[in-house]
Amino acid sequence: MVSHKCNTRGASKNRLSSSDSVIKSELTSRDGSVELGEPPVTLPTVGTNLTDLALKRKRVTVRELGGCMGPIWSSYFSDCASVIFMVDSANICQISSSCIQLLSVLSAEPLRAASVLVLFNKRDLPCTMSLEEIKSLFRMDDIIASATQPITTLELSAHSGQGLQEVLSWLDSAMTK
Image (tube, rainbow, N blue to C red; front, side):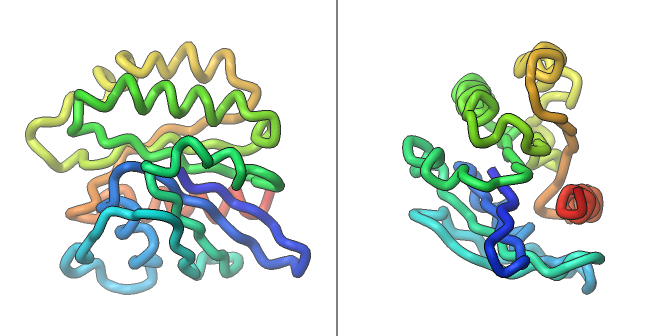
């Protein structure tokens, strides 16, 4: 999950948490302004990492929260204006648990007005379900209809970088709201 937080100095901070380190590393190591090249080396996040991103309209700091920190994610929710929640669409065994985590994030009082991006990653792998199938399993239509937040869904391939520009554009747009 990535969330954007404005601090008192007018700069912005973002939070990113997920059990999937590849996409987190993809977002935090590629700012979209350079050639994609080879995918970055990734390691699972244990704890939290801070990374600066240069967007079109401003510079932001991303706080990456490891999936193992799920039980304490809520301690990072205050003052968040946007959230990116990442789903490993290649791991069918984690789909239901990811959905439960997403519902928990969406029901958190500090995030009631946050812009939310649900990002389905690893779309380049041959073993992934179609986007329609995974959205159906997630019951995205029901979640979107009942959520208080505006929710956008996108897909991404961390390996090829496909979809990364759309994610960065969404984040840039969310930062200006």
